[in-house]
Length: 437
View 1: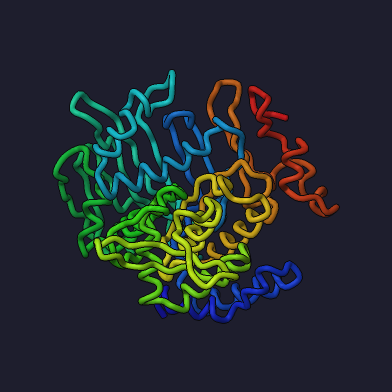
View 2: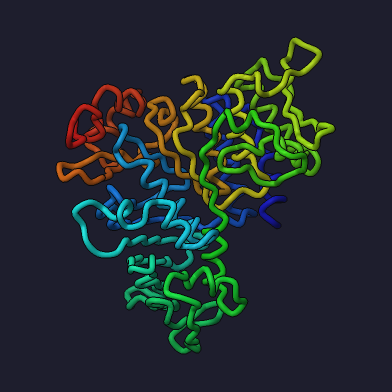
């Protein structure tokens, strides 16, 4: 069964009312897990991210990443920088290393202050549960002619104990790759030079049919969706025409609503049903083509017979609609990043949005940056990381589940948001220079 049809069946079997009622949440969660274990082809999952020399991330490691991970912390703690690492890597695969590099100010602005050496980004991920852990390693340096890929490799460990096996290894545009579905040392190593030292081997070789593992990684990274939703952007009048995927800013929201109405009306109704449960005055949302070729988004309030233009709706209503459209995508991106969803949303809507993200993480991996205690109230301590600046000025991270006393407080009925606001987290104090409480 494909991702789209499986997700439809999954959503159809879940009583959406259970999401709204905590007493039924465990039943709903059990149903989800049963369905996922028997029918769903889970997306790849990033388990570890290691970054070196990227702005405030001089030597930064995120481990034991969950399907939904929230990065919490005060302003300037490095949340947006972690988010930008994913965006940078995604852009390297879509628009090219040089454009992504130039956009961020090159080494002058990208490399950590008072540091030397290349920028290093390393992902450890699994294509599916219980498959080998794969490491993708990328080192980027700079010459007078621009950025270069100093070292890029893919490796895995098929047995334990055992030495890691490299099935792609490139330096400065030259190297070798092993072909085959399950590459082993006996397979053929093919030397395939790239067009230049600033070209990513995975991106180029991932377009060739003889490298399935490389193809899988390329497809994974190019599918990432990093969201910078803006209510102002969603108020626009784009050119008419259905579009399947919401843009990073949400400026094509009317086009996606049109697409869902044409191709997935049941999914659009689920979005409206959830939106009505969050914002009861909203009854329906439509997109209407105009004579000038543009597309107009309209919203109908429940008490009234005629709709209003979306540009007159509140920022929070538009952002909630955009988030639901993203999370209810019939064929969701394999990784979704959402930055500061609390902006323009009422605090009481944030726990519900966190629940929606948690449910969506069954079919995609989500990374959310936030400084809202309300958003993390519905999350587990394993899902929350606190970022802070150490004495040396560089970003550090600590998992809430690893902090002393947190589980005991939760057992007594405390919430994560209250504990953070009351100073019970070991780090993340916005008024402390080193981030400690």
